[in-house]
Image (cartoon, rainbow, N blue to C red):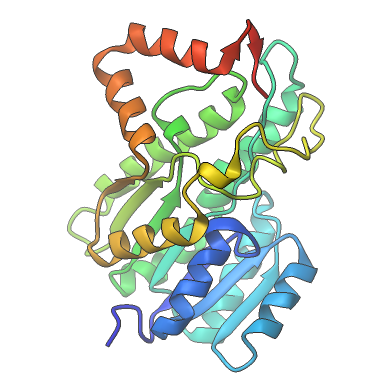
Length: 268
C-alpha cells in the first residue's frame, strides 16, 4: 500500500507545473487531493480529467488571507482533516531593482511568502493533530539572491527562514516541516513572471527543453515527503550554486553576475 493512500494532501497552485504534476502522481497512489488556483477554467479541466476520484478544487488567490481560510476550511469540511500541505503556488519577476515598481515586489511577496503563511496558519491545527507534513516549494534563489529577481529571491529567503523557525517550533510534535529547492524546472513560471510594471513577460529566457521536467521534480518531492526530509535541493546546478555561495561567496558573486549579465545586459 502506498504511503499516501487515504491521506489528505493539499496542494496550492495545482493547475500548472509542479503542482499539477504532483496531483497527477499522487492520485494513482490513492491520495485524497485538494487544490486551489486562480484559473477556474484550468481547475474545471482538472476535474474533468479525474471525474471519479476524491479531488476537491476551489478558485483561490493565495495572496488574500480570507480566500486561503475559505479554501482550507472547505478542505476540512470535505475530507475531515489535512495530513499534508504543499505550499506550491508562486510567481516570479524579472527586472532590475532600480527599474521595478515597489508594488511588483509586494505582489511577489504576497503570493510566495504570505500565501504559504496564510494556508499553513489555518491548516496547522489539523496537521498537528495528524502528525503530518508542511512543505514549502522554494528555490535556489532562497539560498542565493539572483540579479533581476530581487523580489523573487526575497520571497524565497523569507519562506525558508519562516519554515526553519516553524520547524524548530514543531520539534517533538511529530510534524515535519520541509522546503524544496527545485532549481530551474520546466514550467510556466518564467512565462508568467512579472516585469518592472507588473505585467507578464510572456516568454522564458531559458531553453525549457533542457530543464528538469515537472513530472520528475514531483517524484523527487513525493519521495522526500515520504522520508520526512528536512530539505531537498534538486539539480546539480542548484546544489553547486548553494555550495559556492556558502564557501566562496565573493567568487559566487562574480559567477552569478557573469551568468545573468552577458554583454553587460541583464538576461531577462
